Length: 262
Image (tube, rainbow, N blue to C red; front, side):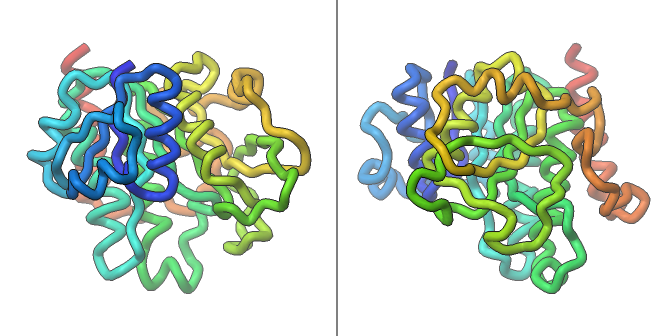
């Protein structure tokens, strides 16, 4: 595959780039600073210089790609979640203009919680969830990965566990832990896994060795209904009727673009 990584120079994206190259994929990274990226990414990674918040950057970057891995994220400042967590996904899907590309989207465990103090201040979870909804409605084959807390795992805590329903909602490491390289492993593996298509999962690690073959884990999950807004077992904590009308209209417009190309 020819794979575009958005968020490639971040702490997860670097692992994704290394593992995508190792898997034999033609790997492209969307980066703002090429010199910095060359110091951080494998030499075999091609660089597309641009900014995901700029739609024109995405138009060039998605040309000829078979898959996109999103590992970007905002820092929760005013307006950042809408512009980055949601906006970059929207720009990439729009740039595809209905062309098929496998999508692996990283969000967060607990993303369906939208009434906590942190989220009231930034809206981060709501905008990440809207990005998920956009990907599901886009018509593209996808896998959505909601990792637990990065690198809080103990030595020997490497056995991957895929959960569904977003039931771990403490908003702390009590929800689970996962190593950054294992997040990348799941994202990259999902691109070529038949069992990963239309699956949404929470990702944690428990005591025991890690697995090389993830296909049984993907295959055991329930698929999201085709064209659904939310994951198959998600709680209805962000009703569509309460969503900004402009956002739902935009998501529907992008979904219609895919339909008109079929």
